[in-house]
Amino acid sequence: MKDTDSIFEAYAKVLSGECTLAEKKELLDRLENDPEEKARFEQLEKIWHSSSSEQHSAERIWQLTSGKLGFRQEVAPPKTKLRGWWQVAAAAVIVLSVALNSYLLIDGKTGGTNDIIEYSAKTGEVKKIDLPDGSSVWLNAESTLILQEHFGGKSRNVYLIGEAYFKVSKNPEKPFLVNTSSVVVKVLGTSFGVRNYQNDPDISTCLVEGSVQLLNKVNPRNSVILNPSEEALLIKSNGELTVSQQPHGLIAPWREGRFRFHDHELVTITHQLERKFDCDFVFLDEAAESLRFTGDFENESLDEILLLLNKAHTFKLKKTGRRYIISL
Amino acid sequence: MRLETDHISLIGEGNQRVFQSIVYTYSDPLLIFSMGFVRKREIAEEIVSDAFVALWNQRSRIAEIRDLKSYLYILVRNGSISYLRKASGRKEISLENLRDFYTLPLTSPENDEISDDILEQINKAIEQLPPKCKMVFTLAKVQGVKYKEISTILDISVKTINNHIANALVHISQSLNGNKKTSGTDLGKIASVLFF
Image 1 (spheres, rainbow over the protein chains, first blue to last red):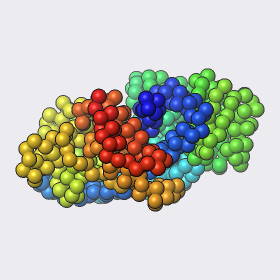
Image 2 (cartoon, each protein chain N blue to C red):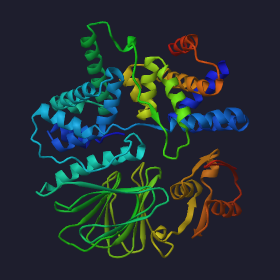
Image 3 (cartoon, chains in turn red, brown):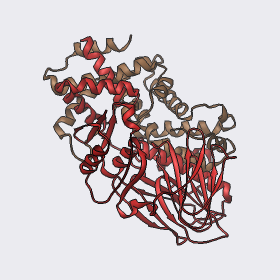
């Protein structure tokens, strides 16, 4: 009985995301040797990830609240469609809409519509978006772009979570600003790529032509201007910013379905694979996380890619369902 | 999810648009939480909007609120309990002696991995859990609230929260695999495990 209790306590911690890496590893190790227990955990995991019916109460509650407070009903409701807000990604989007709203306000609230639009690309998807000012944006998998419908105000503000490639139409009067959690990229008209996934430790900006200005929000004094074929990497935790020459030709190769990385850590590569193939990686050794690889793939399947990586550096790989467990 | 200090201070300055975004962000989860206590949607809607009204009216002191999300949950918790007191005429009702907590039934995920029969069994098992256990389960599983925040909202320790979740899982798992009917004594056992 005691034993059962302790394993369920471990399940609770892992499912609710409150466990440490070591605790997760301990549980997975234990389940590897106990198929019956493993089946039980997988069943609970499935149940944990099922959802409850949604409420869609926001509009009604806003009416009630603003009525009680005597607000004039002039503020249009945010247009974002949010499914299951408690899912992390969606939650982040809302915080960003809040942030964007305040940006727009600070920027000088001109008339016209203030509607907020949200574009998202799902797992394994790349989306091209044409913006009202003639600019184009390619959104990589699991990314979201939020902007104001008609780019009111003195600048063209967008908010990015995830990765995108921008081809911005020239308008010296109205700079184009890509806002992220730690950096703001300011351009007048040029092409560049930005990668800002939440589970990556850094934010990358790559320039194709023209020039961009990078405002460092973590460490404002450490801001830079980027020249063509340079990449700026900002470490989110300390605001450290480094600029280097891009070693390879095409920026944002994912636009053409290619999967390319140059001297990247395995943990970063698996994050990319998770977004492209809807799978899940667990590392049992920290040393395995920092193995480095260089590669260029085009139409290969997930298993083919993993096989080729494994040829370059040997690591142990175990597959259960959509989950891959990596150790040394 | 944490709101940046900037946005909180914008509400402090009376920015209705930022306030509206907060209402849109938290309406659904707060409504589900309040419905757990009062069951009726219209009443829960009133309680949740009252919480937002209270937040707006206190905006001059908003900078003192360290955790906006937990703060809103606590307003809704208090509003819901005080409604129950008024409605039943029983002044002794508190977080500790609730008769029940209503949970929204789980629905099958998109890929249909769980059959309707099983789903019904799971929902039944959840229904039978003690009220506080259901409350913690709803907050942690359905709404993804962090243990630390639940600890503030319900004034219980992180360890107790994990025990609640573990016991909910034990109960669900037993109802699916054990074949043995969960009897009153089982529930008593679970309840007694929960509170040390």
